[in-house]
Image 1: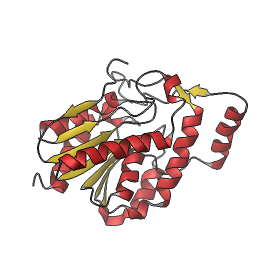
Image 2: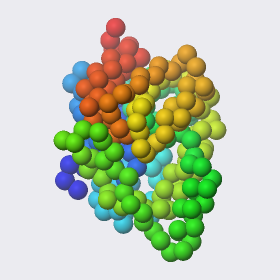
Image 3: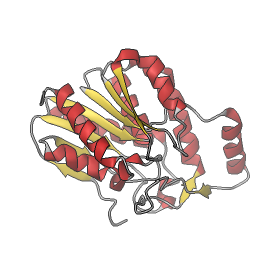
Length: 248
């Protein structure tokens, strides 16, 4: 898909790994990645397996593929940089937390409307029943954006088996939230029609003073493309500079 290409920038000794969301691609995080590159970070914004091509490609992927790609990208960047911050939107935030639980050396995490709590049991059972009946796709979840002049480059359908795999991954992440040692900057949209804000509440309870929460009053789920995108980019770069020791 044109516009879904991964982004890479060679910068200084401090690194930033930026991760996009479920059924999305680097387009949704391009502004954040470029803002980090502009202040001197070495930046990697990978295209996760099954994303950015055709939804049929995603149907054969799942949490092990996405978490494996995130792990490989982090290790590669960490080998080249002194300190690394990780930034993620939605499922990218889930993956950022997953990395934070396993790598206590990560300088800091920036999470934008992350999924860290499984969907209710009745909803999961409903999705499983659809799969069992032979259905493979549901309506798309992309472009939950308040700004009418903006749109997300994402799949128009949601593959159901990968969705169940993501839910299982979120369960795994939720169980270990307390293992995150890094400072966290959390952006929560007050009106999010994809990931309920109570996911952020769980993070707040688990991390306490290690977490700074910023409420977004004007943006929906894909806040990095919405009315608050400039604030997200500014606060993200300030936070990343501070936790990596590259700024005040």
